[in-house]
Length: 280
Length: 316
Ligand SMILES: Cc1ncc(C[n+]2csc(CCOP(=O)(O)OP(=O)(O)O)c2C)c(N)n1
Image 1 (cartoon, chains in turn red, cyan):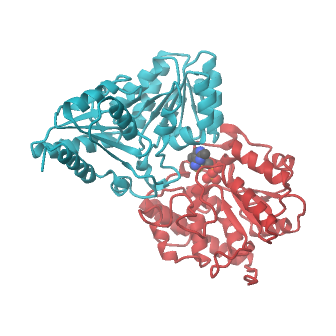
Image 2 (spheres, chains in turn brown, red):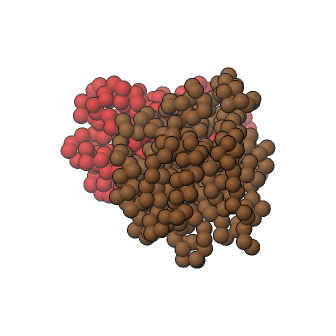
Image 3 (cartoon, chains in turn cyan, blue):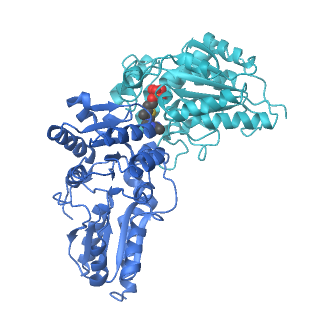
């Protein structure tokens, strides 16, 4: 089997999809009564670009060995990935409303055991990059064309495990590995630079031997271009520092760390959905 | 059953930390980007100079805590149980325990009652990990008053300690009469003893009350002080009541049940049953429904109690 044709969504189409996903994030966290809207909204455009444009994946053949892999290392942004996978055809969007319910495959943190379309279970920060490195090594050993994409949070860049794994990716010169940083500037308790500064972050990636670019993580043309460039990078892994806004798309959630791990109540959800052109 | 009022163990922790900070200017508190959830933020607000929120780096938080403690301070370090005992395990083992550093780890979000965050966050192995470290004191309070007493107790000696708290509010069952190395008897009885910790203590009292309606009197012990353990109370319970039921929100292979089995099995063997989480990871869901689904329902515990009473010949 040769696998699917590369999808060729335009930036406008991706924007429309991202808006759907943002609506889902609000509905899902509202219904669940818990979850992480802020970091899901900041990562939405990155996830959308990957799932609807860049990744060579096939909902008809989810276990196609040559597929690309996406590891959401910041596993608490689960609603964004679940919604994207559902709309891409991996499962029925109807079950999105069961987020965090007993028996649902949609666990609070992305879960490979209960939802195989998720490539790796994460939730404890710092472990996704290492699993991505392992997958990239596996593809190289097996001479598979698979590429591996990992998304990490900026708070997650404080964790030592993250840097150990990044070091391994640089050392093994994994040019089939792309690490994307959701640089929204906030974590649970406040600003990343106030708690434990990670700057100069792009220089750190470069020092770890990553071909590194900095982009606007809400601009589809910039995201697609950076991903395209990564495909033609040889001898080094790629890092993309994507500047984003936590809570993006919902005015009262933007740049507020209080929305890291707090779901909207009914009134807030309705207000958020009105801004996103949707309803509960 | 009386209607107990529920209180937050985490609030009790945060408030007690502030109290300690008022009293002892050498106390330092660390957190790893969860200070709102663990309530160390209360201390941080009042004593910003003695509060270090180090970000997402739990193992390094423990090593920094050790360094601060080796200079003579009492250091509190908090995060969720899965990160304190799991992510940071070897830092706790070497930097804290091997050095005998005066670090008090107070971990919130132990057990299934984490709820929605799911199995990755529901720590069911921390009692095993922490209890097996030489020199480590381990406490699992069942309510807010015990939390306060336990935090004061661990602050009063020089050496490492681990306290496991629950995210959910829990019913106030005690007046905070807690002492390290002592089980607290909440109900007298001679037909059976129920030894319980944490959120299971209320269910243990529920089982005892139901048994009482049938004329069976169960002794109930709050075993908050896991280490040092009150072996005398366990042997007394074995001798005087002849059967023991343990109840814990932890992997049943490696927690309170095995502690009690080992003490009783070597000291005064009697029939014993263990209510705990089977050898599984948890999952997302309503916290209290999760307890029921993972073998911790009051009904299941009651069945186990009746099974023990049958073995003892107390009922046919
Ligand atoms: C090892 C670990 N420590 C702590 C947590 C709890 N936690 C979940 S999200 C989060 C903040 C993460 O910040 P960031 O990586 O910037 O995520 P984002 O802001 O993009 O949501 C924390 C501390 C965790 N999941 N894993």
